[in-house]
Amino acid sequence: MSAKSILVVEDEMKIARLVRDYLENAGFDVVVTGDGEAALASVRGARPDLVVLDLGLPGQDGLDVTRELRRSSGLPIVMLTARGDEADRIVGLELGADDYVVKPFSPKELVARVRAVLRRTEAARTTGADVLRAADVEIDVPRMRILVAGRTVDLTPTEFQILSTLVREPGRVFTRAQLLDAVHGVAFESYERAIDAHVKNIRKKIEPTPGRPRYVLTVHGVGYRFADA
Image 1 (cartoon, rainbow, N blue to C red):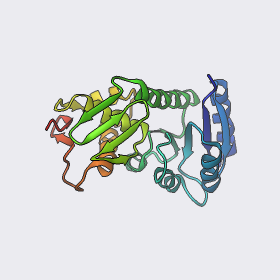
Image 2 (cartoon, rainbow, N blue to C red):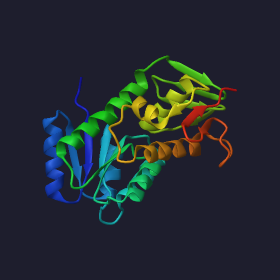
Image 3 (tube, rainbow, N blue to C red):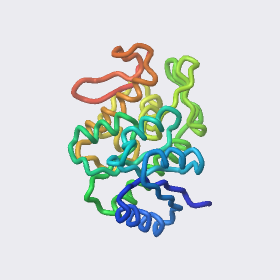
Image 4 (cartoon, rainbow, N blue to C red):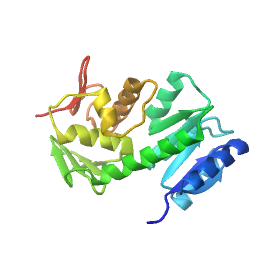
């Protein structure tokens, strides 16, 4: 099996080299770039398996790059950021990042996060039945393809895992902790807000009426369930 390829987008070369060295030692193929435009070009040309993306880039920052990537791709993204405020982290998740690591960080932890997101991506393709159906939603698991009332919807690997977990058992109420466990995530400092951010993204993509969920329903004080009728 060929090594997974990682694109590291980081303008501080000392940090970029450190991340590259740890990822390469872990068996990954690594490409490094230092700005947003070059990152987007590299994604189009090299088609990496995952992006480690610094938010504080010159010019087009990491949030702008994430927005651009999410217009056309479910490519896994791990954000690397000095912005320790929870609101900034939640914005990144709501834009479609799969995970984040806050500077200063442990390179070993970053490698663990990258591996966890890649495992999540693989698990999304291989876990359970080949095709899941509930209400107007159909999920082709091996192809990671989702149809909602006949319309194709693109989700990130984390969003795919959360929706698949809910669709697999319509009507069952999942707590946020259970959903976090289902996607094999490493613990967030505020995991409840992280799951809420991912669910918000899923709803934007699959719900027919904004603000009036039909498929992914909130069970107040507990978590979420997929509509069973």
